[in-house]
Amino acid sequence: IIVDLVNLYEHEGYLDTDRIDRLIFHEMIHGITVTGMLEMKELRDEIGNLIKEYFTDINGKLTPNDNTLKIMLQYLLDNGYNMSPEEVMYGTNDAFEFIAEILSNDVFAEMMHKVKTQDRSLLQRIIDKVLEFFNIAKDSAADFLNIILNNPYTPSFTKEGDLYRDWE
Image: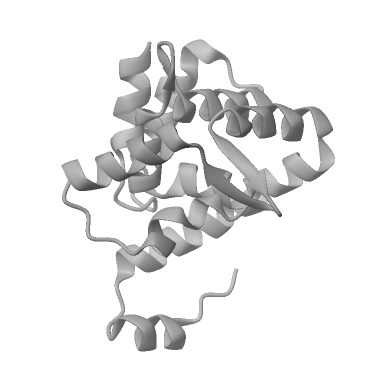
């Protein structure tokens, strides 16, 4: 993983260690999930089908359906986030970025937790598929996420473990 600190500094005007942590974690997630999605057609198809319930693939770019977009924008307004559309929508570049963002970006993850079908959120359903890929039992999923997301080397977005525990 290569992190271009010069460009990060020039873009932001300062170096933020939390942002660097998030970037590294995001790329690590790519390293884990891209291989699985490329090599395992079933995983790729299952995750793709989940995403397609809420997003339309237009020339490789994921576009939220009207209801999903409304939920995403309302979440940002309700929580006072002042983010550029590029930052918010980075996870919609393609299915690989979607998975990396949903597992490494707390704002994107929380938005996807608001996007629900019946009683289960898109975030929960994606995490279930990723954990199933790693053959982790569903009854230990909340504890597994808590350990991973509260690791001192993990960026400071540990809410997902609590969110997952609430889903049960």
